[in-house]
Image 1 (cartoon, helix red, strand yellow):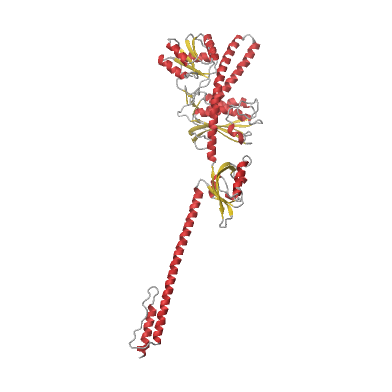
Image 2 (tube, helix red, strand yellow):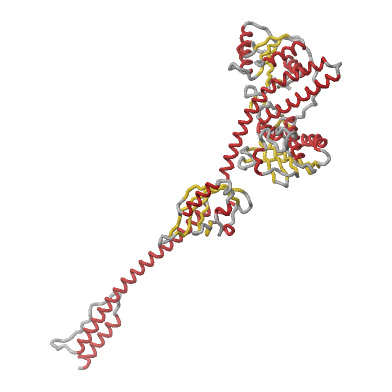
Length: 590
């Protein structure tokens, strides 16, 4: 009876409890009671147990919902943390690879953060942290208004863009910076500092400065070339006239000495105009393949008496130095000019070093001035006082000198500059006050193998002739001088003042053996155009050009065109007679 009424129901309750699962709750417990029966304490236990299960189920549902919400919150937090890490990594990548660098300052405008990228521009973040931008600026004194306006904007907590200034890196090298900044405020609106970026514009400024310098040098070259042209016309008459006077004063030593002084002064003037034309790249060159080492050795021998006993000369010549394509006489003059400048920088004595080496220039460095290719380098270095940084960029300008009045024309380095450019190379200078100067001359490598050595120049004889020469010269003084000199040499002359007049004589049937024409003339026709027009009418006519200032009419990239005969002004009677005989005899131009 007990089993029927109690025990079996307890067993059912125990089985229900042992199999109960919150994740898959069973239906409420029901006991199998035989009707009819009256509710008793066992039914109350079942009801309480079912109520407890229902409460557990509700609590479990609420817990499960809370867990789901927690999972969602954790997922959102994990995504936020991942996004924050990605953003931080992205910012770090940008900061480390960008051409700019990033910075932050506190409310006192002192740096509190500098990205690692700043190291690439020669600055140490550890040194700069705690300093202000103006602490390293170089232009605060020279541009006070700019800085006053910038500092006022900072005090007003205003954003700024492209504020440019000059400063030094940790090595002392000057940089041009451009800075952008934005003020930062906290949640309460309190100013906490600035955050921004900076760009190094040094390379851009250097490129712009080289372009301005090149344009300035070209403009000066045009001016000096024009002056040299007119001066050479005058010198042609002076030198020629002095020769005539000297011949007439051979038996009067006192007057002859005065004439010689005038002749020496004219020769000095001719040397100056030649240097001006070289700087202006208007000096016709006669480039040839030369053994650079041999030329440097020969030039070094000439330097010993020029420099004096107090200057020691050393040579460091690379054994595998290439041959160079250049005008040997101009190259020798360039080395002498550099050596004389070096001597003047060492008044108390010192060491001059001549060095040669092969160089491949890529056109990207500041010293190579944009040229590319294979070059032979000739370096002239000294142990002198060096060149101040503020005038270093002006040393190649004509007539610029620091030697004082009467101690130089200021054309030595100008000549070297023009010669290098006209030859197809470049020149670079490196100097530091108190430590000396190095000038490097880069000449294009020759494509051949065997350098040509020039034969010694023989004294010119005043050879005579009997042919007829058509003289085309627009300057009346030069024209009169040439007619007189040619007449004294036995030649007959026809004269024209410009190209049109000369062509009129040709069309009228005038007969002549040689066209002797200036290159630069008024009237719209230069000497080359005149010669071409004459050759159409008289094929095979011989032509000798003359000029104190050449242009592209007969010169290609600074070099005389093949087969062109040129007599440069000023010239002497012996040079005139020799050149005319060479052209009339059909000899190749020397």
